[in-house]
Amino acid sequence: MEKKSNNPKSTVHYAGFWSRFIATWIDMILFVAPLGFLVYLISGGALLDFSDFSTSVREAEQGNTLLALQHIPRISGKWEPVLELLIAVITIVFWKRWSGATPGKRLLGIHVVDAESLAEMTNKQAIIRYIGYIASSIPLGLGFFMVAFHKEKRALHDLLADTVVIYKK
Image (tube, rainbow, N blue to C red):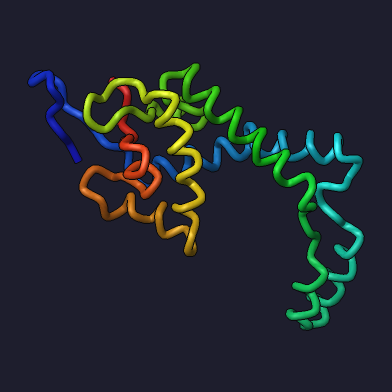
């Protein structure tokens, strides 16, 4: 999808669902997983309770799905907010430092900008956009799937923050 910007010579190319999906997975591998491991170490292993893991595997192997699900490792209610806050801060720092891009977006040549001016998003937009991820996740991540159907490839969090993800020129 293309859009003419205020400058008649420039054309905007919106980043679609799959580009954004791949960028998210790259970010999960490059900084979300390492942050999770760091918080796991700092918490002395309290972030995830692996004590029931072997029971869960054994129940699954025996075909007892409901019992297996009851014994999956649980995330600590005390340490999960620490992890979430770290992820939020790091994400927003990347957005501000790299003109609206996280490592995954940067590798794919896309970035987040203000939907109207196509300028860098403001701090307020960055915070609203990140908090908007919660709304995009409920229910069943439908807010993220909007990208596939919206004419400007915008997710719910983009609409809330008045941002759009585009390819860099």
